[in-house]
Image (cartoon, rainbow, N blue to C red):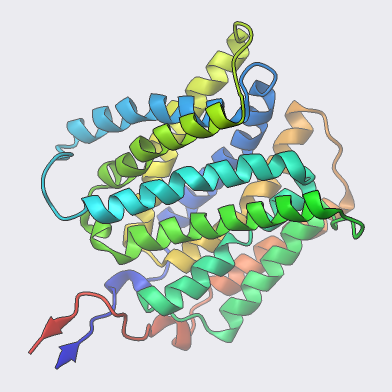
Length: 317
């Protein structure tokens, strides 16, 4: 007989510290979108992604080595690590190339469909069950993001639709990477090692994409661009992504993913102070919707707190 066991952290509520950490991560990721745009005149997107992965890899090794992580120990994680790395690399190819075809306002809305994919996958793979209140919270938060970015234009052509699909594909891969990190032996690996698989695998993928799309650096990047690239490599990928995977190992993937709805709102605020974009009452209403949605997602629920059996760690008797 088989005796499936649910992942212990599936129904674990987020602590105050985890919530504070997620807010910091979302603030960083919201600003990162601005950083990418500021560097684009000097470094094309695929090359940006490749360079930041190359810069993040030694950061992961240094942090992991200081913590005693055994990167090359045979622990059965290389297969899921390679799968996660392939998805990680292709994810950024789809997102950055989709941005070439569809307006940024549409792209941000479609990118943050990722929590829905995580919620669906968490139910099927991880045994995390969301109640009606949690699903309502996801919908309310997504509505807030859509309102903050702006309602998409109804008249679109085939190129825009293709770009939309690429962005949705990137969101699905983002969710799938989270589920692989949570639902396979990769969850037993240190966060630095789990992310190291992805960063290392993404380098040749992004390099190939840059070559296929004919990207090149035609002049010496400005000091600001170099500083922002260091910010992306050392802090964003090397540090915050590691913290994300550490949280994914400890808490509900669906509830953590719901917090990413805040990221584009931070991006709008950052654009106001850095790029001098204007804010409106619409943004205030959107912020209320996002906060209300997150409250509903993280509200204790008897249904959500009792995860169904996950098809993981199956033992035979």
